[in-house]
Amino acid sequence: TADSTEPISDARAQAGEYLTTAQGVRLPDTDHSLKAGSRGPTLLEDFHLREKITHFDHERIPERVVHARGAAAHGVFESYGTAKSVTKAGFLAEKGRKTPVFTRFSTVLGSRGSADTVRDTRGFAVKFYTDEGTFDLVGNNIPVFFIQDGIKFPDVIHAGKPHPDREIPQAQSAHDTFWDFVSLHTEATHHVLWNMSDRGIPRSFRTMEGFGVHTFRLVNAAGETSLVKFHWKPVAGVHSLVWEEAQIAAGVDPDFHRRDMADGIEAGAFLEYELGVQVMADDGTDTFEGIDLLDPTKIVPEELVPVQLIGKLTLDRNPTNYFAETEQVAFHTGHLVPGIEVTNDPLMQARLFSYLDTQLTRLGGPNFSQLPINRPHAPVNDLLRDGMHQTAIHTGSAPYLPNSIDGGEPLVASAEEGGYVQIARPIEGAVVRANPASFDDHFSQATLFYRSLSGIEQVHIIEALTFELGKCYEQAIKERELQVLANVDADLCAQVAAGLGLPTPEGTPVEPAQLSPALSQVVTTPGPIA
Ligand code: HEM
Image 1: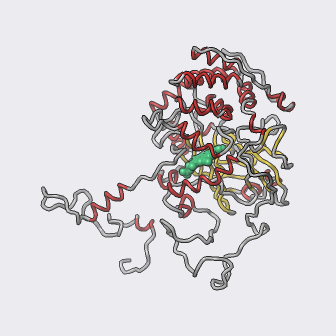
Image 2: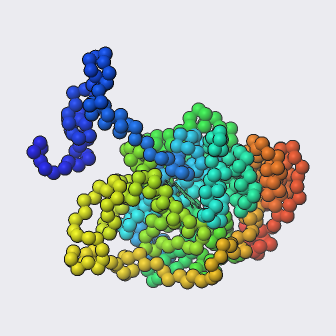
C-alpha cells in the first residue's frame, strides 16, 4: 500500500501492474530519452535513461576462471540407505530420504560462449541441500586429475587456456603449451589418456559417469572411519560421440549438450544417475594394494573394489533463470556435512582454499550464500555480519560467543547434537615441499587404462593423439610426448609416431601386475586394432 512503511519483497516488486524505475516510480515511456526538443541533445537529468543504461552496463559478472561454460538442473537425491554402515550423514544413511539437489555440468577450459562438444574434461558438480547443511560433491567425468598437488593448478590451466597473445585455441587441447605442460609433468599422463579417449567427447550429460576423484574419509554413527571414492553411474549407460560427430555438433549446434538436457527435462525424459562408493579400509596407510589413495592421478580398479550403490539422483526441473541459478551457484569442496570428511590428498587440500577465494571475486564479496540458489535448506545462525551485498537484517547486539548480553544464543553443538566435529586424525612429519615416493609412478595406471579398452576405443585414442599432437608447431614437444607414450604402451606410441611421421622412441612400460599381484586380475587383453 502507498503509505506502508514496510519494504516490499523482490517478488512483489516485480509483480506490480505498472512499469517502474528501480525505486518504484511509475514510468510513462521507456523508449525515448529526455531531450531538449525532439531534435535536441539528451539531458543528463534523465534519471530513467541513466539508471537503465548503468544497470545494463553492469549486467555481466566475471565468468568462472575454469569451468566457465556450464548448464544445470534441479532434482532430487533419494538414498537407498545402504551407506548407513559407513556414514552418519543423514541424506545418505537413511533409506528413502529425499534431498533436493542442484547439478551443474561444465567443460573446463572453454569460455562461457564456447561449444559443448569439444574434447575436454567435464565438470559434474552436485549441491545437496541436506537438513544438516549443504554438501557439495564437486567432481568430474574423469576419475583422475592432471596433477597431484594443487599448487600446480594455475600452471596446468595457464597451459590449457588460450594463448595470451592470440587467444587461440579457445576450447581444445590442441596446442603447444598444453602438450608442453603434460609432457613435462608426466603425472598428467593418465588423465590425458582418458581425455583423448571417447570419455573426452561425451554424447550427452545423461550418459556421463561422474567421480569425486579424491579419496574421502567417511565416518559412521559409531565413529568408525573408512576411505571412500564416490562414483555417479548414469542409468542411461555411458555413451560418447565419435570425433566427427563432436566436430559437426560443435559447428551446427554449439548448445548440443545443454539443449539435450533442457529439452529432455521439459519432455519428461529426466536425467538419472546412481551414486556409488568404493569403500577401502582406513588402516592408517592411506593405500590399497600398493595404490596411494592420496594420489588423485590414481584409480582403484572396480574389479578389486566394486562400486556399491547408495542412492539415486534424478534431474527433473530446469532452472527458471540461467543467471540467477546456473551462473550464481557456488560449489565448494569445503561444503561438508557430518559423516563426510577430507583426506590429506594435496590436490584436495588446495581446492579447499580455492573455491571460496575465487567466489569472493566472482560473486562480489562474502555474502553470496544468501543468494537463493546458494541458500542452505538447513537453518542458518552464524556470526558473519555486514560486507558487500548484505541482504539479511541482523538483530541483537555484537555477534560473539559466549555472549551474556544476548542470552547466550545460538548454541554450539556436540557431535551427538549434529555438530561437525572432525575425527581426530593424526598428522606428523617434517615440513617439506616434496611428494611421497609413491607419487613417482606416473605411467602404470595409464598403461592399465589403455590395455583395458576395446580395439576400437584404442583406435580412437591413437587418432585423437595423432590429431591433437599434429596441431603442435614445435617438433620437440611432439617428440617429448611420444617418449611419454613409449612409457605407456609400445604399440600406442608406434602408431601415433607413424601418424605424425616421426621415429618411435624406446620406452619402459611397467606391467601393472609388477606393482601389485592384485592388479594382474584387472588388465584385460587388448582387442584387435582395426
Ligand atoms: C570449478 C572440479 C581441481 C579450482 C570447478 C567446477 C568443477 C570442478 C566441477 C565447476 C563448478 C561449477 O559448476 O560451478 C574439479 C575437480 C578437480 C578440480 C574434480 C580435481 C579433482 C581444482 C583445483 C583447483 C580448482 C586443484 C585449485 C587449486 C577451481 C576453481 C573453480 C573450479 C577456482 C571455479 C569456481 C567458481 O568460480 O565458482 N572445479 N576441480 N579446481 N575449480 Fe575445480
